[in-house]
Image 1 (spheres, one colour):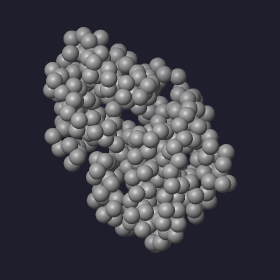
Image 2 (spheres, helix red, strand yellow):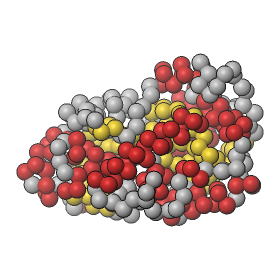
Image 3 (tube, one colour):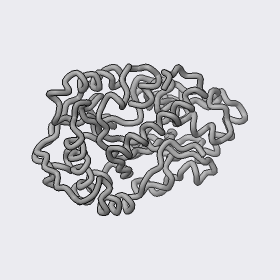
Length: 330
């Protein structure tokens, strides 16, 4: 089975928190403020995750203040380098990141990896999705595969990031689950989701590979439909959208998002950040943010987060090797 992340249901997350997932006993977090460092521009998935988390934490009274700094560049590498270089002054900073920190480290987009930071916790997940024009002939992913098997070059998939990026890897994973050679998937790489969307609407591409939360926003405008999503089960945010598994393809994917501290952050400070994030899950303020964005809760604190990152590095690395993409040796 092709699986890059195993999700947890909200009930399991809450139960784990209540039984002391972060260690013996319950410690009341005492964090006054958090400065969120965002490795991309306004309006993207990282930005929404940081601002949504800050909104929930402040409105729930778990912290008094949240501030935000967008720092684009180098595929996220500029923000990572900044956090490392200013570590002593950044004890109150949490940087948001996600699956690309693994992908871009492996593909040498930047020299750092998660090992150069202090992993705090994975907090939420956003599934992958395939989107088609509202009037597309494709009604299911099975229709796409039928066309692909008849003529592999007839199926063009657009994505808002480079070959070897998450949009590309999700497409490759789905087609591999259908028995196709992922190297034969015709992926059209664009610099940003807007250009990829324009390719879909113009007819240049037949499908768009994107995040599920972005797909929800696109579908709400009425020009496109969500063909299928990559969760273990359907999302409450779009209950009519089927999963790949429902259509017979044994593949799931969720792009985790989470937070990292400076490399010099003490274990006590890191644990306190994780504790604060854990407390957030049981608040109505968080549920308001989560449901609005269609996020899945996948809380993995501290050591569990590190173990997961190591496992994902291996799984993603194997898929990238199969696609013939350049990797560092790990």
